[in-house]
Image (cartoon, rainbow, N blue to C red; front, side, top):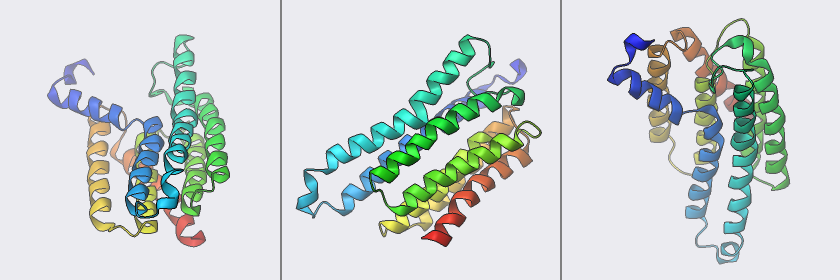
Length: 216
């Protein structure tokens, strides 16, 4: 890998870090808060409650989908159970994924308790299902968790825009472009093959999108 450490290597690595799967749910929660607040500013009776609501929702999302799993990964790396935070070795992925699944189940419960729109709860549960599928596939074939996460995000963003009556076409095109760039980055870093990144993205997209279409 050392021979590839040119400008494209660093750009690919930096973009991969920005798209780290554990960051995505918190970013989406923040985006949803901004989009929703912009739509209901005229409803004065909600203005006193929204800041606290968003604080709990975004804070809880960060806790269960990012902070706790990240701490687990750091502890496992410290003890030598994994070689890096990307868990590049497929044989090391089972236990970290199980811990992440356990923590994300509390995130789903949080969304249910806070009475978030159905599409958010369905999307969260579907994301957990996508992670389970990745966990089952990855010991035999290193499907991309980065792209699976971005596929889930694309479907969730589409649901947010549809629910709040925003235009969706431009946003979906931008997400598709970001996904394409991430595919190139992961392949350039020799982290995955083209088939693994494409299948990862389609997996996340369809596993979240299809239940929302059926149930919503």
